[in-house]
Length: 396
Image (tube, rainbow, N blue to C red; front, side, top):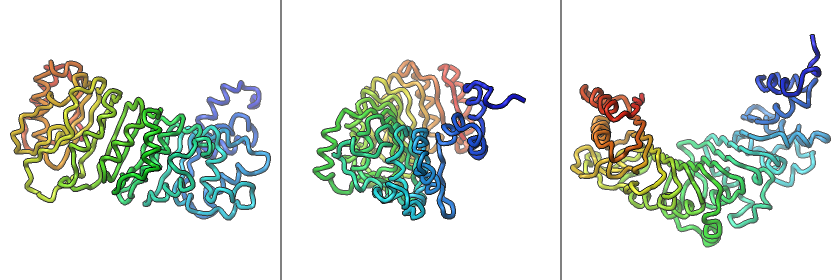
């Protein structure tokens, strides 16, 4: 049998890339040159009994003579329970006390990090504390090494989370190579501070981000409007609304916050499924985010009809989907909400397909496969799609 050293590095790299971390750790004893870059490429550090995986990982990087291992890390996933611990088992190593937490120590050591994924089990206020020593107008050069190269930031959210601050969002958007952010965002209940406003004004139109996904509480649309002035070429925007009172949620104001994205956005995802109203019999919902008819490059939309048409199940609003959809739309997915029956949704889609000349590029329609007892609708929808040469996807 030929020894490992006799194979070209390209073949060894292909073989080792298929191994699990445990096996890579074993092979690193005999082939460090190939296995260690793969072993340290994307650490997944979940909580466990002490010492934590984060502490153990940091300990290995701080061991004298192993500093180069930090340059292999490209994607890092860390659970918040690890972040909150002080790491007393590593304080004897240099640099461990200067940052205050294990995670911040680690972020100061990773010059080639591309993706950071944080998993807070309940409270996102720990995320704000992570940035507690920085502020929105601080020079990017003073941030940890990991932020100098970061391309994607994700912060897992939970229904109990309160979201992160506007100041933290501004800081992330200012990172030089950032492309994607997926984060719970709680806009301020009060106007932004002068410092944050000044930082937003200075950063307007400069961010390189292309994909932005927000979730949870939206208290002040003005905060979101200010944030959306920072990207210069945002292509995908997603917003998932938490459980909010529709009577107090201004869809029209929310729609106005999206205007800075009008000329660059290609994909829009708006999920207001959890919006509710104190008036359970409210069938005359007239709020709407406004027409997207003049959005020149928008071609993928996922949203409920309520957000586009602003009407309840018994409303006689003259608006139709062809009146509010962009002319260049290619894919449309109608999400459910509390104010439209799915049968009403399908009726609107059938009407839209009969007006294909209004949306000539439409190639795909997705709706939920539940017609509330109207057994003729499925065939009407399928026939309309066949006639319009549009792919139909019936979701479950």
